[in-house]
Image (tube, rainbow, N blue to C red; front, top):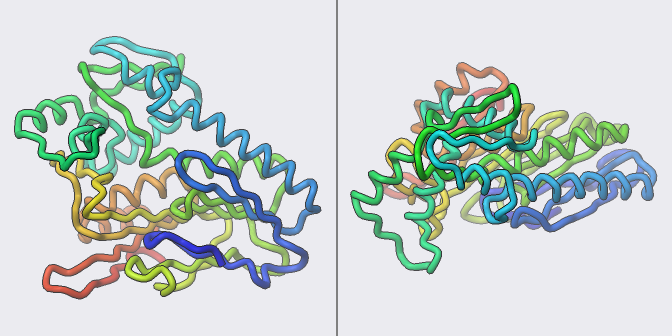
Length: 318
């Protein structure tokens, strides 16, 4: 079993099926990514995993907001009315982000860069944004301020100061692309995870119906909230720490401080990654409605109750 963070998973490999499970790891995107490959010769599995990790590194160079040469940095340098051509990965991430932004009523929004800067000062000080600062940041926030031009894969912004942050969707997109590459290598049984917050399964191990994941209790990672089996499916998890304001409700501009967690299960790692972030700021009724409108999506919320105690809410097919 893998040691998992409170909001993540543990992944069982014991009895995975006929033959060994080969395991490979790589540090990227601020997390440890792992690939588990079953039913293949060791050297072939290693070469396939290395190719997938090379693709991961390439994606990071394109999608991160820290490198001045990345696509995201190029977009963030635009003034109102300007445009820049980007790579396919960046464009596809933004297309997916725009769709989820519309479907969730703005609960997921990759244009929250300026809001993130207010709630997570670089000097590590306690955030205390003024009403004026919040208003200015919110005026530059919203996917309606981003124009995606599919004809030439260019991105334009409609206001000064729009800042893109793909942190809520990038890992999910990365595991999707890594899985696609492994399929090109004719790998039929693999599991990929990024920091145990974004997981995708390719097929299932020989003689098994699915890969098995255990959802970890946020209060005690040694305790399981239940097990699920996934085959050609993705699972994502997100959590909120009251001392680490990394989740912001784009609809209000305010950082989320409730110590809650969310999970999503569906075929796309990209969408699952984004949805768990959205679910953290959506009400249970909104999550239930979303899952009802999207039969391929299952969601789960772990919530602390105001008077003490906790509750687990499940939506869709669990």
